[in-house]
Image 1: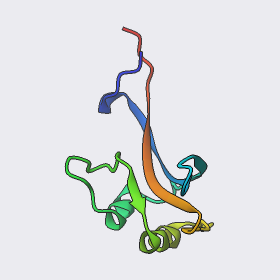
Image 2: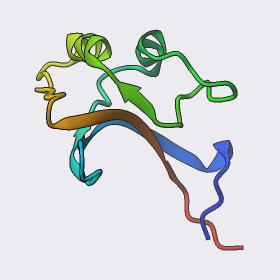
Image 3: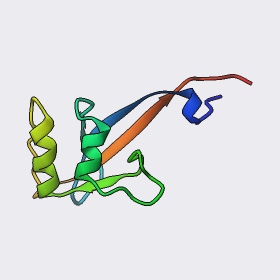
Image 4: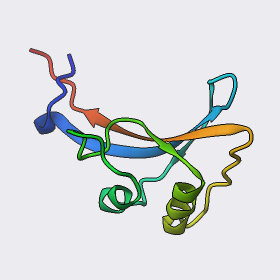
Length: 97
């Protein structure tokens, strides 16, 4: 059984998720681990009690430009077709109790 605690956290990956605008299905997922969480915190205003940005955050045109400024290979955002969200997901140790 996986126990979701800070002590069992192995790593956190950051992604930009691209969803079809009208179907709300996931189109692509872009790994953006090269952007430090401190930099992401300057782009996104944290929700209360979410200092590590674990909740989903919508990406608009201004935020997309800031994200791309940190990436070696920029994401080709297409806001006419897609909606974009920042997602940060943890990987945890599997522990059997």
